[in-house]
Image 1 (tube, rainbow, N blue to C red):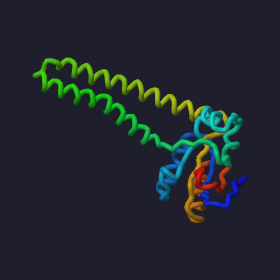
Image 2 (cartoon, helix red, strand yellow; image 1 turned 135 degrees about the vertical axis):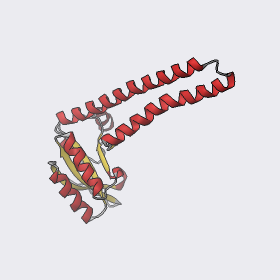
Image 3 (spheres, rainbow, N blue to C red; image 1 turned 45 degrees about the vertical axis):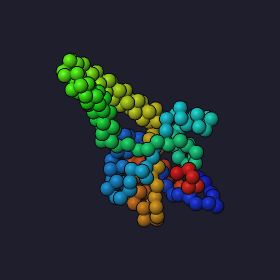
Image 4 (cartoon, rainbow, N blue to C red; image 1 turned 90 degrees about the vertical axis):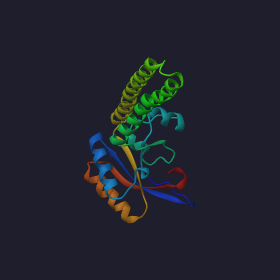
Length: 186
């Protein structure tokens, strides 16, 4: 099914994956083939779909060609780790730097506070990182239980469409096809 529009449109390759590792491998190959992370998106959580569309879906394939399906940016495992590192670093070092200014101003009276603040920041960062990892894993599992992980890849031209279809198919995706949407939905 393709959405028809008289205005500007975008074409996307669409695929459903049964395994996270296959999805990640396909994305790695898409990136190596010149696609950008910003070209790729995944179906948002079931809750987000229900809230935006007013109904639940039984199988992810039902959302493949839905122009209003809520999406989230694809994030590689490496980018999740980078975000986690940045979060932990911020929670650890920012309080330390702020406390260091206080130490200098008070000639070392609050040295114990610096150490305590840094340790508290690291602990909060670790707990938050684990929560984010668990939340991400639960969202992926929710979609796997409903038929797989739905990936959309924006394609700029027929050559990009061909490359995307070939890569997605090579990585065991199913329901692989190209669709066209009004540009405002991409």
